[in-house]
Image (cartoon, rainbow, N blue to C red; front, side, top):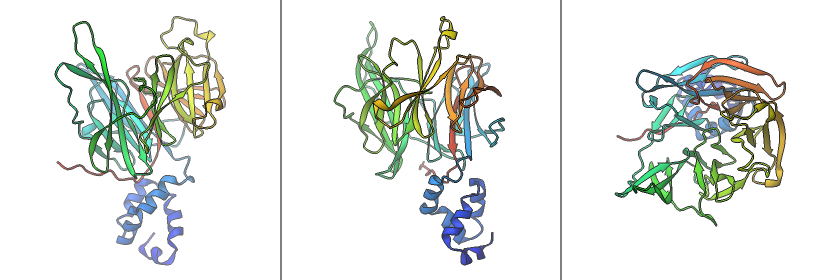
Length: 379
């Protein structure tokens, strides 16, 4: 396409044509002329591109996995560049700030095509389509002498549609050091605002005390402008929710049959744009797994407890834990040996992929390409 097309065709027609192109192609097109650059870089085009529904099949996958080395672990970040769900074509990314060395590193998101990578110490915002990234500054919070801090849940991330900004939220617990064991002191909530590049404290606005959050990477997701964690009150397990825009916490109850006595593990995902809870047998259970099913519950109306509906009962097969859903009918899981496997909810077919990782280290996020730019922090 030449610059002359910009003068002949209406802008809306040009935008429809551009929406059919990959981000990689759009980035090249920016340099055809000043007018192309202005259009593709405009907030209007980026917002249309994010919300475009004509390219729903263009889903890409980011993998984070660890491998055991002589000293510690090596973390590898990869992107699947194939649109064929029967095969994976991985492209390993070499980004200096992403060379984590811990066994378990987390992926959070996506939100408008952006994802977060963290090992709890380092937090990186990353656009896998453009390869742009930035490291967040460390929190200024310092424990007083005699206290220590523990991060129980993963970092939350999402877009504030009211303030037009991206936010990160982190929940921690501060303990009093004592020879008889740690005594719980308080829960601390911090929010980082991307637009001002700064952390701040948030006081949870809840009728009751903030529940205890448990680290569960296959549970922590963004949906409906709200981030979700696996948590426990004094009596029951709940879904702890944080509205990214209003910064208000609230608890969401799981289906009534899901309780502390059912002996199952839980995973949260999104299926057909609906919040979905996966209840599955513990991988290390000594019980006969043939007596247990993997149950999939879908919340048909968000935040309406009565709308929880059991949609699938899957016969047991060996796996460690669910990872995510892909193309709204494939459930991705990690096997006990570290292998990536998929379960087709339509055909009940189980497929093994040639993708290995250290057991329990595999993390997966399905995302749609985005042109959203990530600001560069100053020195």
